Image 1: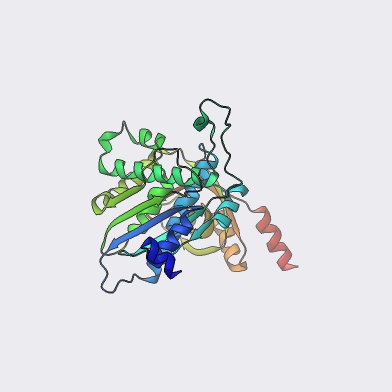
Image 2: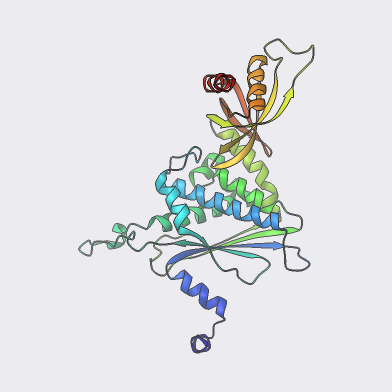
Length: 325
């Protein structure tokens, strides 16, 4: 080992990185942040990993189905890819650098037909490469849109080029730390698969660009057609609405349901009329899941279901009767 290191003039971390990059696309996330002792809070590290996971998951869903909104359940093929082929790599020297390795299955890589006059055009990238290229393009479009929106005909033009709501949200979560000056994101492509697509390998978002992300998120939300979803989960909070300024139909309350959205558990506010609110109280007392359907939206960091809201009482009623017998 020492001979190899001295021959190629490499430090051990650099050698490990080169070995890993032979059969995996590497994604580096560097946090340029004020740090007194080269450490960051554990919760911030957990948020970073969750946000990176969200970005790669969004890119994987888009690579699998470019028309997907990124909502709903993940296809099994994509889920298996995220579970098996996305790995945490060794850290690098820097302010704070996380390394993600996206492994390439050589059996996936289809070689071009040698008889073709234009063999490059016949090459089909591995799914891993498609995912990482999708992520790189989306991050670059996000940076360019945050730096100069006049470069685009509008938010729709940016979306057509790869701007994605879930990635913008993930970047916001990653950068919501005191003293953070910039996010530095870079890619290193596996030598096992030639890179035939011209794609940015380095994307840096300054503090000024990061500060624009909330407005970009609002524009993306406004431009996205409302999506009706069904949420299922326990009732965590109950808040009754009382007063003379509300009608009988509105004389209910708001509840908070802990349910899965975008494959992550979220706290979702659900406003209910009086009758449905009573069902929510019963579900809360009996510790039974509550099911509601409506239009899902996000205001700031708060997820909310809006009307018309339909509550599925059949399962809840069945469970309540069963518990009484």
